[in-house]
Length: 534
Image (cartoon, rainbow, N blue to C red; front, side):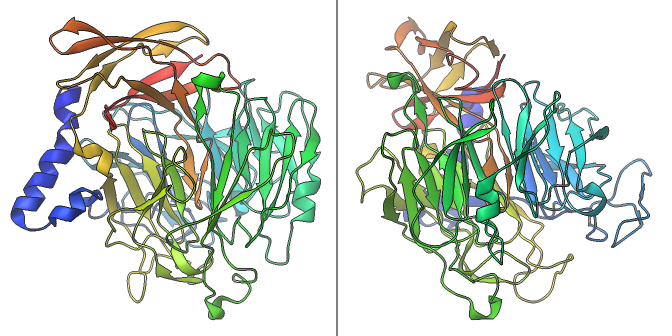
């Protein structure tokens, strides 16, 4: 099916739902939801979209039987597994959004609260976890829907066991692995001869209930890392392994696991040479919420925004429409941020939260302060502890998971969630352009995109490049969006236009790997083209 034809599917579905009375007219303007898989077989704790457009789903291994059998008679025999030493069910899977089919994958060691990111070849490098998986490095080389790719447990190990760490792909092709429970260091995968370095930030922010786990890590355009834990943050020179600068403390509640805020680095723009950067941190839980789950304290309703490279950086505080912890912050193709999933009370933990927040909020960073938030259509499925959200190449937001229990539990309040649903935001409601760009680019090279559009294109075309992060525990590891240069479109007949642009200048701005490139016309995105930066 052609790109433009596939791009019409959300509008067609919306019209069918409207005509059937299942969708109210006003909801189209706020987006709409659809359940795309009634039973995925596993509860999704980690998720990432591969450059084939299918989605890696990953849960713990020590949770007992899932509802997804392994194929070809395979079973996992692991004598140290604490739930099921002989297990013929899957704890990872690949989901195909085109067909909505699930294929089981074989994962051996425990991936509970692990971390990871895609490398320059498009391979998922997955690190750490719990128990026998705490120092493990696993690889998944993606393949198309008809392939048989699967997890590979490597012979390499982390230098220290890491549970609740964060990964960031670096310009040299390695990944920084930062923090974890009782792991106050940074290390690199592959290590290439480098050891660990202690981060004073992680030692100092280790509160009685932690609140410094899954630290927020962003690669800044000056090649330093922004590292945030609890309420504090630093600039870190990963090449020299030294703290460069301590930034002001963010007012309000703790923001990291288990208090569970989220963070993004706002889009980098070609107009200033991709040099200006801002960090946004939203949500969290009241001090002590994890230590006192019975209190069900209200979650944070604030965001902090900072330019970490300013001469005198400071946090600007904004108020969200909803109180929220465990909210996922995911880029839209337009460069806005959807804050989705989560709870209005409590914190992360088994049964530690209540009052699920079903309505996403859209944050538009380029609007004036006070006008940046818009509330969108709500879901019917609570997504709280151990849930995910990912941007698909068709522009939808795929949501999966939510298991507020230690094991699979399908009774009582907030049962284990095996359904997958997709949110079509309002930007999918207009005429969608088609796009063709080269599938591989070198840094700084000029390129020409071909845009197909049946309508008025006088307002011009935007070209946005978006990474594919690993999403877990309310944080999208490695997420970044670049607004590329785009000259005025030049018509070539039959609704086709050429748009001159240029690839990002270097691997500091766009670490090597696969990116989704969207054309935006009149506020509506194309389907993404996958581009490998190398």
